[in-house]
Length: 162
Image (cartoon, rainbow, N blue to C red; front, side, top):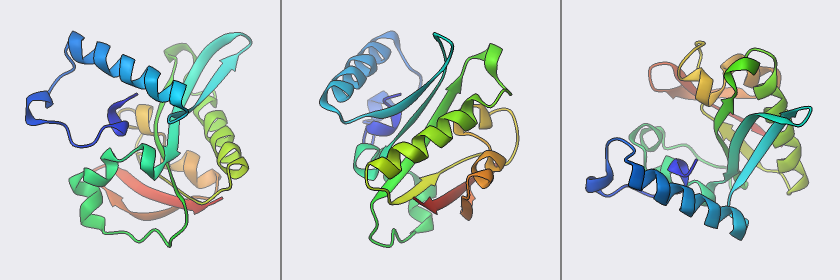
C-alpha cells in the first residue's frame, strides 16, 4: 500500500481511489520496492500467498506524522530508530488462523536483524474493521507491546522496543 508512504495529499486528491490514482500508486509502490524503500512481509500457505503486512522506518512512512490524531499525541521517540507497522491484509479464506500473528512475528525478527529500535503500530481493540487492516490489540499484546495512547474511536497506539 502506498498510502502511508505519501506525504500530505493535495486537496485535489482527497477522496476515493480513481483508476488513474490506483495505477499511479502501483507504479510508485513498485519504484519504492525496487529502491529498497518499502518493507513488507508475505505469508504463504504452502506456495499460496495468504497474507501481507507493511512496515518500515519512520522515514519511509511519513504520512502518519501528518495525521491529526498522531500530531495531537506529541509523543517522544526517545531518540531510538522508530519503526512502524501500518497495515495487514489476510486472504478471506485464511482469516482467524494466525496469519497476521505470523506476519507480526516475522516483522519483529526482521526489524531485529536490521538493528532494532522502537516499534509502533495502531491496532484496533475490536474485531472486524479496522482490525482487519490494522491488526488487533490482543495480537500485539501477545508480542509484548504496550498501549501508549488511544488512537481514534477504536484503535490504540502501541509500542515496544526490539
